[in-house]
Length: 291
Length: 154
Ligand code: HEM
Image 1 (spheres, rainbow over the protein chains, first blue to last red):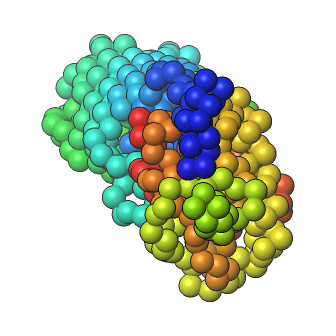
Image 2: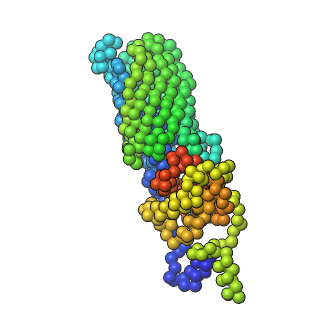
Image 3: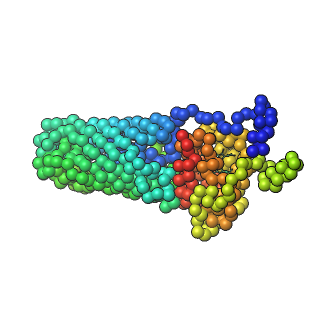
């Protein structure tokens, strides 16, 4: 008040009391690690579970994005996933993911030929509906988003030959993510309505079950520092194909923000039985950059 | 007349601070319920620890290109004093909070989410430098985080 009166007195010498307003548009502004990493399907989330978080480091005032490269080295197979995503005002996420699943020597045993490679392209969109996973620390309401993933497997003839009904499919999901800051925990639960066989690499629907079913993805993680988080994930999967049982997937992971724009994730993933080859477990390594 | 006015203002305003428009004083202005005991307050190093953290926080904000402009021309003597009270009150240190509520304190600043994140990062750094364990840092941050809803206005 005294300041204001003083200002009135010698108006011409005083600067306005209000601060200089920053530009409306802002890049960055999310707290470290709070945009998660990228799933093998390209969406923002954990490694195998899609979360309600929107990819990129932008806030409600900006545009952000992320890109990732992931390698899952299994005893019989190698999965590589590349992807990129854009986050618009921390509200909408658009993503693209590309997977390659190299059957290596197992390809010959399966009658496909050594090094036969399945692949798929995944185009995704996610919309945040309610909640703020990070700042709403006085409410139970998690951040909730809905998402869609359109997937196109590239081995139409082979996936039909093993019993898949289609080589294209669409997943729909709803995800709830909550940071319990006082406890240092990140929790996520996702319901996915899908008919994808092995994420879609082996097509969609099958001779066992044709249609969609509801599957669950869960993640629980503990913050060890502002740069390091460790946790576990679970993802149930449909079992549509008669020729081979499909198992649920698990992983244990550590994600480390080595710099503001770079996160390295190392995990141990158990994908169970894949295309009759049992016990597919191995290291999962992912590099992610976000802005 | 002018003398008595000046005197009454001086009595209400601690030395080195500018006077502010009158407001109702209440601990509720702190914007969070305090922890039930003083364990966290002691983990933070009690009064000297919190004083060091707040002084460092304000210094970091003043030197942070993302938000430095917002702190220019503000009464940082008062800000330091009431922030220390606020943290003491919330951490269970038994202080009373004499400042304004979070809405009144930040209205017209046009703060954005990114400003809040910058301030949180600076506070994390100040707490870390002061040796506050990570889990204890998060307990204070969990109390402050919901204030974003009133502090951020655009
Ligand atoms: C949880 C978040 C925050 C808390 C707990 C907080 C706390 C406070 C308190 C206690 C005051 C003094 C109130 C009074 O004078 O009576 C204050 C004022 C102020 N705050 Fe914050 N604040 C927060 C977020 C922010 C952010 C994000 C910024 C900008 C980046 C900011 C900038 C300021 C400034 C410049 C003042 C001085 C206002 C004046 O002198 O009129 N605050 N804040």
